[in-house]
Image (cartoon, rainbow, N blue to C red; front, top):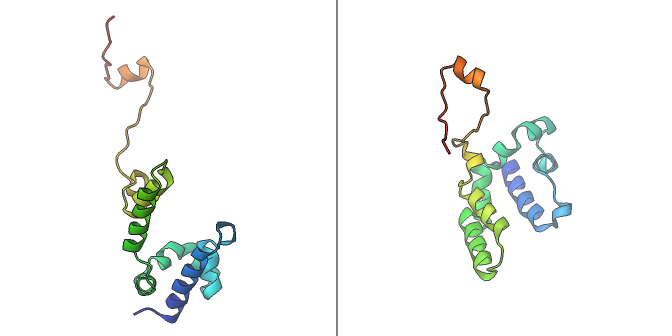
Length: 128
């Protein structure tokens, strides 16, 4: 069950998204505008917005992950040109982006021959 503050926040989120981008509030300002303390809003904005009560209220208002995904797929299919931004957004919603999951990364490091020999690393030499 959502608290009154969470319900107000969900309503503010929906209203905020309907505004032009240049008039939208950031997460902290959105939380403060409905009554959260500025310190709480600056430290726990994402956690509060993703809380069960806020998400339930957003679902009741019709804003769900399924709706967003369906609208995104429809937009991509209707405009078959370069849809990089939409695809990036879809990947972010589905948690498919590497930087969000903290996956493994390949690192390329250049070290001197002296350092390599110190640690017993003997690189392969290509013969031409």
